Length: 238
Ligand code: MN
Image (cartoon, rainbow, N blue to C red):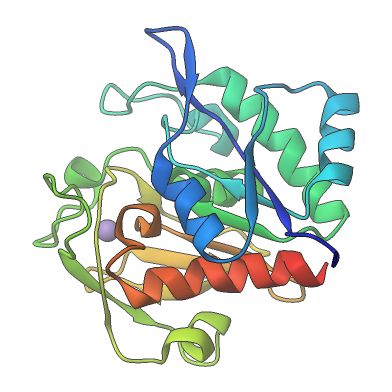
């Protein structure tokens, strides 16, 4: 028996109306396919529990979900902002802080990039169509594994090293996005309308986040597989 599979703690999805925690299979399958062992975390902002989860897990996946509360980045909530989930905001703030302190690999998807950016001092568009209108389709209809726009990797970033610097075709299902990038993050990919769609934290083992949805496209799209693999490999090394 070897060291075992790297354990990836996944932030739970929350259905407020149904009072339910849930999970999209793609997050788990993408991690399993990449050689990791995913577990869904409890929804908690208890620091003792979070510290123990940090010890148990080799990496953390910050999932999609509700809009981040605009108060996190110093704005009032506009009518165009969607539903927020204070329990997730509260949990993820403490989990992100603890995971960064321990240099645990972190991967953010959709809300994940938005939350990480806001938590580290960046700001968000509360609603792209009304605040940054463009010809780019950012909120596609199903099926969600079909690419609808491109993103161009930024030269000399880990994403360009992993996937090359040619434009990537990505799916897109978001109405919010990074507005001002947090000081500690660097852009890794940009959409044709200037929206930052991937970022990382230089100097860290692995803190990456993307605005698109590899969990919907990992079966068909090699780039999505490579993203999960890069994350799980970083967790394996930890
Ligand atoms: Mn997009």
